[in-house]
Length: 90
Image (cartoon, rainbow, N blue to C red; front, top):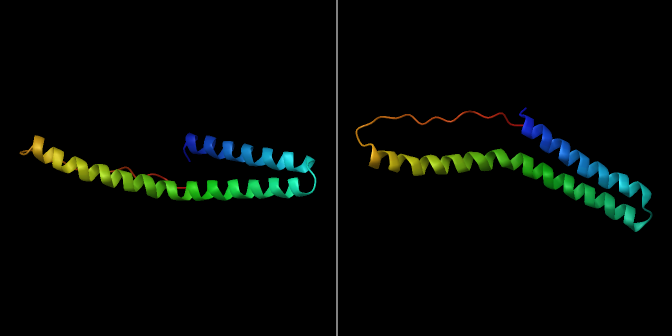
């Protein structure tokens, strides 16, 4: 796991745990609302972290499709190989 992913997950954990800590001191509807807010934020972060690698792969594919015509135009007699590095997913 990359250090940036660890930092992102730590930030998410701190945000959610701070909301839940605040919820402990609240009463009634405010406690339920705080717990619901923490749940919504947690679900949002889960969706974000699960979809981000696919989004990045789609962006790389777009860039490669733009790169090939450029290379053919500027370097018509050259041969090239375009490869991408496999990234680890969560």
